[in-house]
Image (cartoon, rainbow, N blue to C red; front, side, top):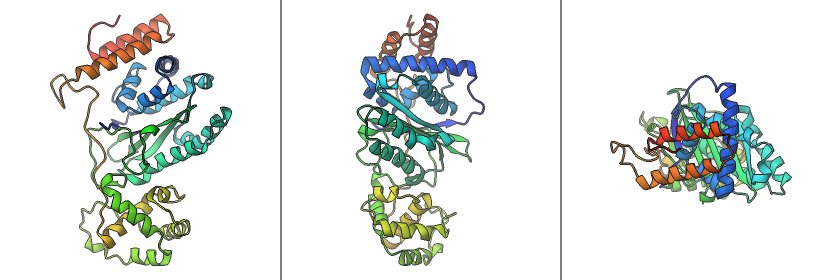
Length: 362
C-alpha cells in the first residue's frame, strides 16, 4: 500500500529555543537507537513513511497537525547529527528555503569525506525536487527539501510545498530503493484528506502515452514546435480544462524548445532533467500531446485519504491492532535503547502513551 503526501495547515511562529534544543538532543538519541537496533537503512525507510515521521515529530513535542513540524523536525535531525554522521553511517543534507539550494554541495562534501560517489545522489536529489515541482503540478510550491543518504548510497527525501491560496502545506516522501522510475509513481507514500482540482500529474501510470509523446515532441525543430503551439485554437478548450493556460504564453518557451531540440532526450526522465525544463514546458508539451495526438495525461491528484492505524469509531476504517502493536513495540524498543536522561525518557514515553491511548508504558 502506498503512502506519501500529507497535507498540514500552515502555522505561524517557530519552536522556542528551549524546545528546539531539546528536540535536537532527543532526535539525536532516537536516531542513534534506531540505527543501533535496526541499521541506517531502516531509519531512512521509517523517515520515508509520513505517519512514522509525524509520530516522531509528536514525540519530539510538536503539534501533530502543524506544518511547522516538517521543517523543525528536519532541522533538529540535521543539527543533532553533527559530529556523529560518519559513526552512524547516515548523512543529512538540505533544509528550508535557501538552505535547500545548497543540497548538491552538501552531498558532494559529505560523500567525498567517506569516499562515496556523489553523482547518483545529487541526481536523485535534483530529480525528486523536479518531479514535485514540475511533473506533479498540484499548486504547492516547494520550500523544503531534505536529502538523507547512507554509506551504502541508499537515500530518502522529505520535501514540503506550500499552497498560498488555501494556506496548506503538502509533504512529499521518497525512498530510493522503492523508486523503479523517477517518472512513474515514484513516491514512497501518498496520504492526504484533501484533494485538489486542476492537477497535472505526469508521473501517473495513466500518463505514460503523454510522457512518451511529450518527449518525442520536445525533439522537433523549435520553429516547427513553436509554430504548432501558437497556432492551437485555444477556444477549443472548455473553460474547465485541467491543463491551465495562465502564464504559459511566454517567450521563454521558445528558448526551452531550442534546448530540448539540441539535447534530444531519450525519455521523459531525461527531458525533465534538462536545465530550464519546468512546469510551463511540461504543461505546454502535455497540451500538444493532447491536442495533436489525443493522448491525455492524468489530471487526478496523486493523494490518498488514509490514517496510520484507523479510527476507534471505524472511520475511515477500524483500528488495525497488529499494525498498532508493531508501532508501539518499535517505539518502545527504540526509546528504551536510547541513552536518554531519565526525565526525558519518562516524558517521551508519556507522550507516546497519550498518542496511542493504551495502557501504561512505565
